[in-house]
Image 1 (cartoon, rainbow, N blue to C red):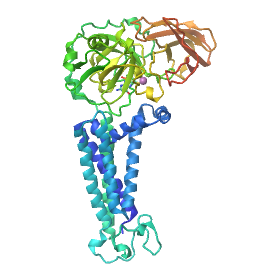
Image 2: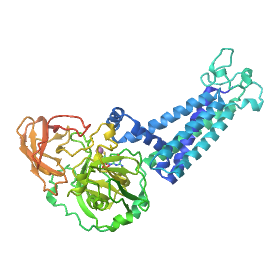
Image 3: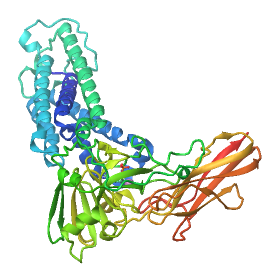
Image 4: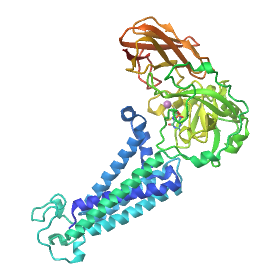
Length: 543
Ligand SMILES: Nc1nc2c(c(=O)[nH]1)N[C@H]1C(S)=C(S)[C@@H](COP(=O)(O)O)O[C@H]1N2
Ligand SMILES: [Mo]
């Protein structure tokens, strides 16, 4: 007889070994071959927005780690349950374990970013996991081969091994073997050995799995990025005038450091793409298909532009917005080569990892600085921001334009194709709305009495900021002093002051007006389907 507890433990440890070993080996193959990541990655697009949203709200940018941990936990529970079944149906359970282990193999096979070779780590993990399972199950049933005389009082914990009696119960059902009447005779020392093996296996595999998963989550394609040498821009972006950034302590820098730049994507780990293997294919409703390699792209005259990128999910006052100097080639010129059909009204950009964005074709063919970008603030794109190439389209939210790890531009029509987020309830087209936020003082700050300094940032890409109004409590809107305008596609920073503010609680509120005369609306609405609105206000106290 096998105790269901030992059997469940064996199943659990085998699962740990599978994922631990596979994740370890996956380090050599790239994150696309790690089974836990592949599983999590497959769950993301299947998860309804109603579930995703609260998870993101709760965990913020840790949502990816949360998903990985949940997936790992579910796998362990499943492994344990199948193991438990092995206490009386060993063969069935073994079969089920293999089938369950083949699920991540299948998932890796069908994922767009992985190739056949990427199943190797999981297959090895599966073989090791099954071997461990067999060995542990043998330990769990070792009394038959030892022939040890039934040891008198046994020290098995009741939960671990219900006393053998005539009471019918699951602990006595056997997988057809004839020893149901035999007294279990595992010696306490063997039992201890088994428990210790289990614990060590579990601890080791947990460490491996956790370590490797976390490592691959933060994995940077350091070597590949270092290999890519960017050309000097044919047209450099103009230097940022000192007056673009008002002198207010605590104000965001005018250009965002790439490591502080917000990151939003559906990828659990940024795909690692070798620039030498990368290419961009322009196809669909075009006269001539175009394929561009990285060497082709780097040989073209590349321009630099300062452009502020914004996420549609940015809450009022939030920080899903960043400003960078992008180096790239005008998408307009690439499309010109392919000669789009006049009936085409959309370009569906595809990412290496399967993400898609629908961009109105005019945003890529008019005179705005839409780029196929390879550089960010003077360096190659970091892996999490799209290495080796991404799109940057001024004036449109990222989800309909800023495809990272871009590999295809499919020229098509809005009535024929839909993009990743459009299929999940978001708009197919989404121009950026005029927005502003207060950065100084910070919420609930304690400010010394006297003159109050207020500062922040406003943006209205493609239109430009005309004016920023600030009010203290229920006072009048007063125009803030604007930093110099760098171009209409970057944010504009501002500052203002209020004198002799009384002690006590106060609120400052901001609104911006763009150069087309749009006034930021006070009306509150949620970000789905095309961005939150409302005025940002913060509360602070004067001491
Ligand atoms: N491949 C890929 N590209 C993507 C996304 C994604 O999920 N996958 N998200 C988009 C969204 S919603 C935004 S707001 C921007 C964010 O770019 P960043 O992470 O470089 O700030 O990338 C866009 N490009
Ligand atoms: Mo976004």
